[in-house]
Amino acid sequence: MSYDLFQPEHDVLRQTVREFIENELAPHADEWEEAGEVPREVFLRMGELDYLGMRYPEEYGGGDDVLAEAVLHEEMVHCRSGGVAADIGAHVAIAMPHILHYGTDEQKKKYLVPGLKGEWIGALGITEPDAGSDVASIKTRAVRDGDDWIINGAKTFITNGARCDFMVLAVKTDPDKGYGGISMFVVDTDTPGFEVSRKLDKLGWKASSTGELAFTDMRVPSDALLGEVNRGFYQIMGGFAWERLTMALGSVSGAEQAMNKSMEYAKQRQAFGQPISKFQVIAHYFADMATEIEAGRALTYHALKLYVDGGNPIKEVSMAKLYCGRMACRVIDTCLQIYGGYGYMEEYDIARAYRDIRLVPIGGGTDEVMKEIIVRMIGIG
Ligand SMILES: Cc1cc2nc3c(=O)[nH]c(=O)nc-3n(C[C@H](O)[C@H](O)[C@H](O)COP(=O)(O)OP(=O)(O)OC[C@H]3O[C@@H](n4cnc5c(N)ncnc54)[C@H](O)[C@@H]3O)c2cc1C
Image (cartoon, rainbow, N blue to C red):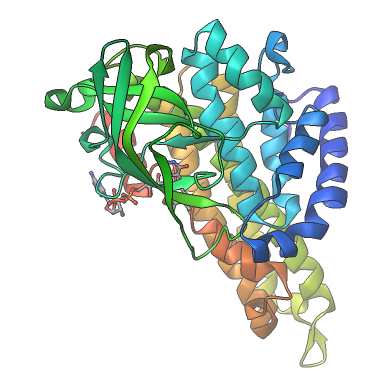
């Protein structure tokens, strides 16, 4: 199916990026999953290859091409670890966009220039132990003290949180105002009072370093404020569009990759004297999966086109994330079934994919939250 979206140069880029991922990332996936961390050298290497700044302005070292970054998020599924893709994604598509959209020129020079080179790693800290979906009820507090701000509070589930160099942080600057009292800051993690309380163990995304963080009398200068005081909620919602789109892109390509691998398996695995792909029920699984993947791709590319054209397609992005996340879970579950007992074994990538994909209906806004947004956008809520 043609989508009139990517240009020939994106096809060339896709090939080059895939070769890099297959040759330099995939062979190390098991080791990094075991270690629970993606080495810094990976960020540096991807920075060297200009893969971290594809959508960022040239003046900060980027390539100014949103579609090129979309290609990267699609191709990252070939690295054989959702955790590796998550850490790169959190840096490139979740943390740094806040600085791109709301940062001053000084903040962009300070964080984007080393960030795009992979010298500094970023994270986005919104979720707290008692506030996830309900962003307006976060409790981390920033209080003015002369020209500085003093921050106290905690964050949890933060991707790259246990090892980042800077964090884009959501805090309450006016606790009486609910969502109208949130502001964003960008803080250096070597600031006294910033502490990694715990590195979290997870169902999947094993290579990703997910952190729980505590801030105790963390003093930051006034130029750590990112955007306007008390406009943070709107900045957060704005940032979700790209984060959710990248999750939809990764879900579609992840589902497709799992389907393709299980098709190879089904053609060679024998049962009752024939390849299992010859059983009509198995072949029909593939027909269903191929159809769902194509539907997910159409929805996602439609949202991507609207986004690239400068729109704010909240409804379409929410639909793409909702549909593709669940679709990929269904597809990967079916693929695991096709592998039979081998699908349950760690030596086949499908076991890891099954664990990793389950995050999509939770992270970046749950399915239920996506439905709440869609309800409002279609005029029923
Ligand atoms: C591996 C991982 C990485 C993450 N990375 C980051 C990160 O980098 N930065 C960051 O800030 N956060 C991160 N998160 C947090 C993630 O965004 C939250 O987990 C998510 O937003 C849900 O919040 P919660 O976990 O507090 O669940 P809750 O908000 O407590 O929700 C619990 C359940 O209630 C449902 N629910 C809540 N409100 C409603 C409602 N109004 N209507 C219907 N149902 C509702 C939810 O959908 C869910 O099913 C990460 C999470 C994980 C697991």
